[in-house]
Amino acid sequence: MVWDLLLDNAAIKAWAIASLVVALKTLASGVYTSAIRIRKGVFASPEDYRSQGLEPKSGVDDDVDRSRRIHLNDLEAGVPFALVGFIYALTQPSTLGVWICFAGFPIGRILHMITYARGMMPARTIAWSIGFVITVWMAVSSLYSLL
Amino acid sequence: MVWDLLLDNAAIKAWAIASLVVALKTLASGVYTSAIRIRKGVFASPEDYRSQGLEPKSGVDDDVDRSRRIHLNDLEAGVPFALVGFIYALTQPSTLGVWICFAGFPIGRILHMITYARGMMPARTIAWSIGFVITVWMAVSSLYSLL
Amino acid sequence: MVWDLLLDNAAIKAWAIASLVVALKTLASGVYTSAIRIRKGVFASPEDYRSQGLEPKSGVDDDVDRSRRIHLNDLEAGVPFALVGFIYALTQPSTLGVWICFAGFPIGRILHMITYARGMMPARTIAWSIGFVITVWMAVSSLYSLL
Figure 1 (cartoon, chains in turn yellow, blue, green):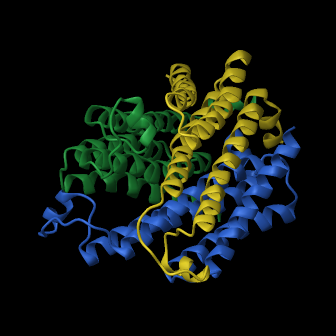
Figure 2 (tube, each protein chain N blue to C red):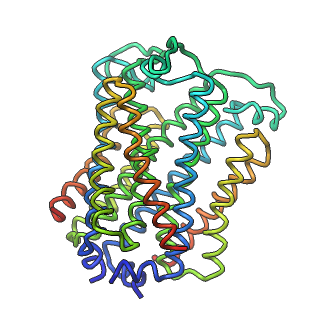
């Protein structure tokens, strides 16, 4: 079967595992934001305050806002990675390239989360750059194969 | 042809239909935000006010902000679903699993939109949880197949 | 090999090239935001100010905010396009349809970025509509093929 063959391909399989890790990490960022909201009693909608038995209030909370930024950054980095990575995996990449890209990206994103949550600069920029360079490299390499 | 065979696979076909529904629903959230902006005369850019013959003003509108949150939540939930669901569909899932996941997620997301727009809590949290549990389950099930 | 055959398909290849361009353009929006932040000295996190040797300050900057909106709009439009486009490419679309959709979307998005950055209305709405109509059309056409 075709789908069986697709996952028999080592590059597609590596892409799939990396993408699952990145997707679970993105979902975890959302849950983390909800946990901070409940712990600090800061919500986005008035009905959320009522459901917690609190008075609605306005204003932002630094920790909630930081967690929101981490979550949004997961989407901003993860969407291009998953899309470009799938195409890259279809272009018969080298085994070394597959390992560097599909192991490197999840590691870079987890380091990004840790350094962002702890406010570590410039470590956060370096961690973010790992995923960025990998995605741009895969995109350029794939375009070169396709054109 | 390969692409023909891919869609001949029942799991991939179910994923495709669910993903199209989720994508159209996400686009609809964006159009809904624009409709509220025009009706209430609240925009993000000064040129939008000018194009509507209005004076630029600042500040947020609760309805616009709520619609924005629904739209962003569509992306936060829909991106992991579409990505994880594609991989899950490639792992020879059971027919029951395919039905539950690919019918359940769009239904959960539509219930989320309705309950969020109407400010219904905790109904919104329950609706959101449907999609979340399905996505996490597909991710864990796929990782188990792949590792 | 299966992955080889997938990219041998003209529609999948056109989808891949269009998606790579859209992904690179989305990444460029993020880099552009960072460049504006550094030039104007306006950041989201206090540690970013410290790493630049600046005092943390609050408040928003119009140019940073505009660039953030362009970036978010890239995700809001690009995610449905890449997902729907992949499914559309699997449904044996006509050569004309493939050309219009996979050349038209990247062109529409680049026009959207230019008109948004320059505050050109209603040109921005027209540019945005190109991508929107293409994505909705591909989704409806794909659903028709699948159901």
